[in-house]
Amino acid sequence: MTTQNRRPPAFAQAFNKVAVKFAGRRVAPLWALVRHRGRKSGKPYQTPIAIVGSTPGAVYIGLPWGRRTDWIRNLQEGGGTLVWKGRTFAVAEPAFTGKDEVLSHVSGLRRRLAQRWPMEDYLRLTLRPTGQ
Picture 1: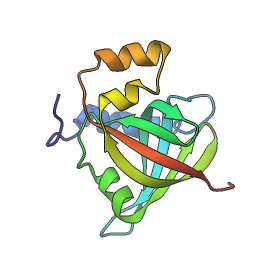
Picture 2: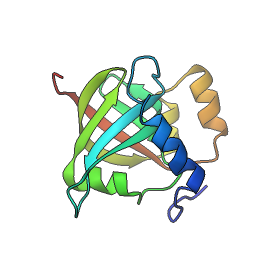
Picture 3: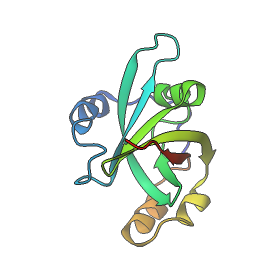
Picture 4: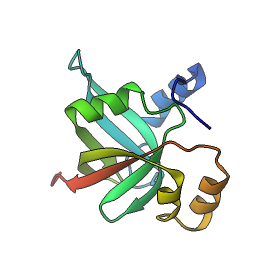
């Protein structure tokens, strides 16, 4: 499924307002919180995202709204942090990847769900501990 020109629907935007309160906490390991700054405004933003898979130094994120969402463009231009499982990481090297790479790093239920998910756009974020 190509998602290059899709925008999040209103229900997703409403869900994000609730999810931002839980994302990044140890009790919700599926959800992480991306903190970034607007490219033009410099305004700080927090975006909840779902972690599809992980390695010791990276996470994989499914992109249902495509590669051109504001939070991705903000990370590419100005960097940011990721709060996941109660820890904060600096985000480095955001790179688009395909389903095959993601499937090589997930197992169990997450693998079965990713195999069935008709999405091909994923983002790999390399993580560096920040000491926070």
